[in-house]
Length: 189
Image (tube, rainbow, N blue to C red; front, side, top):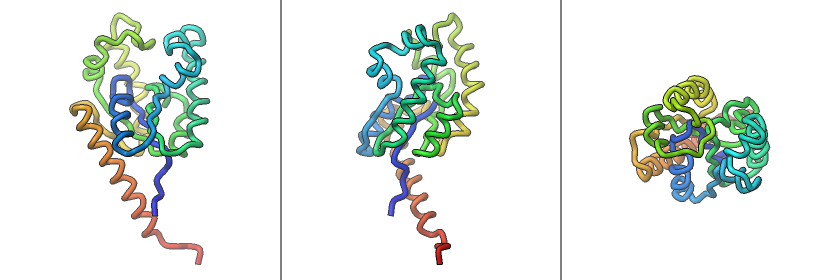
C-alpha cells in the first residue's frame, strides 16, 4: 500500500540545484520534471527578467501561484520551484497539501560560486551579490525550513551523487510514511 503524495516540490535558494539535481532525481524516480521558471517563460513567451521588469515581482509571484495551483492537481511530477515561491503563504500551503516538499539547503558561499557567471536572475542585478544573497537568505531560510518535509544539504556533493542520495532519501521517506500508516490502528470499528 502506497500513500505517497503525488508531487515532489524542490524548494531552496537560487543556485541550490533545484533544476540541475531535480532533473536527475526525476529520471531516477521515473517521474516527469517541471521547472516553474522555465514553464512560466514558455507560457508567456517572456523571460523571468522581462516579467519582473513589466509586472514587477508581485506580478511574477501571482503567475507563480497560479501555476502551483494548476500543478497541485497533478501527479508523478517533480517540480523545481523558483527560489521565492515560499514567500507567499498560499504557495507554502499548496505545496504542503499536494506533495512532499524538499528543501535543497546550501550556503551563500556555494551560491556565489555556482552563480558566478549568471546574469539572468533579476534579484542578482546588484553590485554586491553576497550582501543581496545574505539578505534573501535571512528572509527565506526560515520559510524553507517551515515548509519542508525533508531538508537535504546539497552544497558539498556532485550532481550525480546528490541526485542518487536524494532519490534514496525520498524512497526511504515514502517507505516510512507507508509503514506508519499501515501500523496505525483502525478506528472505524
